[in-house]
Length: 201
Image (tube, rainbow, N blue to C red):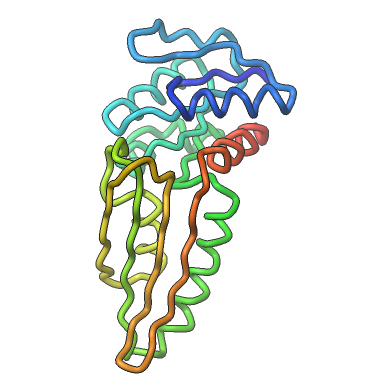
């Protein structure tokens, strides 16, 4: 598969390494200030910033290239609503987190939330910790967790050091506390998930 990388920072480099390991070809590496040429890519993988993600996707679509996007902190729903091309054929896969472990964590969170619906004595909250370079707050993953719980959930966002990402969901009552946590050990899990998703195109 021919892959274009939109965003060539730490995530872009990790995605490139995994894609090459899996036998794919990187035909474009686009970073700030580079010409937006996708060079016949079958799919683009986009990890940039909230301010540039939408424009990058639209520019890829203009070259008829579908996009796997892992950038959070921007209005994905608005793009899907205003641009009907996304409904004509698969042109965009966006996730708040591509990590296999996090997506299992999402399933656990939904199951726990469903069971807690009949236990009003518990109050849910979320804490997310990331590196100081992360631009959006709270994280897209934390927002997804909150949406799955389905009620107003307090989210605490912590930015420190080079933490790849830690998410904790807590259900607290006067009698006891239930806690589930996902701890990312690096970027590789996110990058692998993005490449595996791109392989579906």
